Image 1 (spheres, rainbow, N blue to C red):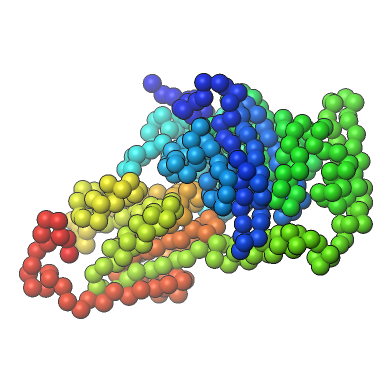
Image 2 (image 1 turned 90 degrees about the horizontal axis):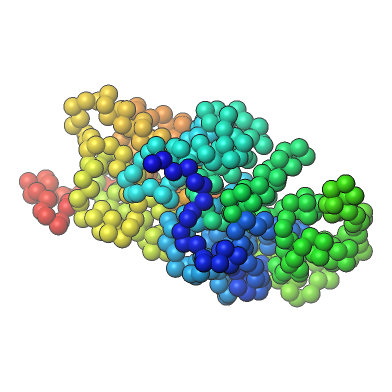
Length: 480
């Protein structure tokens, strides 16, 4: 039977009104300065909660804490009755889906293929998408009013169309919780209304708990069941839009005098900013010590995003010596041990995967994906291997662009570049547009000069001495 239900069914609380995701007094700091302080929040199925607040209030940080991308320094996040850190990354992704504010879509992929990336948490280690996954993806596109876009390239879409497809990708995860960071950013008024009405309809129809960060106060008031107002990283108010958005609170949080009125035809609360309040122009030296610490934290976070987090590293292990893949796998396991999301894709390794490190990694649950059927340097069917390499690269592109991984190993990729099966310019374009903070490690002999020039770190493995040269074969349990 083909399943088309878009909501993860397990585990569900006995009480449907019980929170599916809860933040309990969570606090997060950067360089010992508070960014989010002592915030508590409950999310329930079928409810849209919108978090509002000025720039730097901690909205995005709160979403990342609830999604498990950041760990609070105190307090806890509870998912379906269990602390978030006790869920594996894969199981967490089956319950929580996120749509970040910025998503690079500079590669040619159809809407359907992009949405199918959302099925990754439901697939086995070596499993490809099947008919059921395709059916779920089509259902997600239909639910977001993007069914007609299934075969269209994302490069040929408007901003509103792309946003609907990205939300469809999140829905294809069949989540219980949907986290949206500025879902209407850079959209015109009509598309803003469409996206927010879509979000509310999905929550109502599919009983998904939605938390969205939104700047526009009138839009937030129109579409939220509850509002959470943040200022200075703290929760100022949590309740209905009418209770949260008062002239006094807006003046205190935003530093502007606002006019509030209810539309007589729709009953919707509208907010109009009139002018800055005198306190909004106060220089940093007039702030409290907590305010100055928060400002330092914001500046530190901006520097981090612009530096190491925004860029990530491209590492190349090349040369004729042994150990390139083993070194990459060691890095992968170390990253996995630090709770990073990792994957290794192998271009010329046999599917059996019986060598020692692979067996150990598999037992630990590390995701290892062989892309060929054992093709090697002595292939008897070059065209067959070319097709395998190109199909493998398609999978690599999808996994890099999905944003589901912190570290991606492309093992023996240079082999495919050397034989002209892949285009180096396309590889470099994919690396340039990879998600924020993602690290990519590439291994293989004869790395092309363009790749070496592009990489942040290049290690050359030189062949000095090897047992193969003396005619010693690999032994069971010891692979050279």
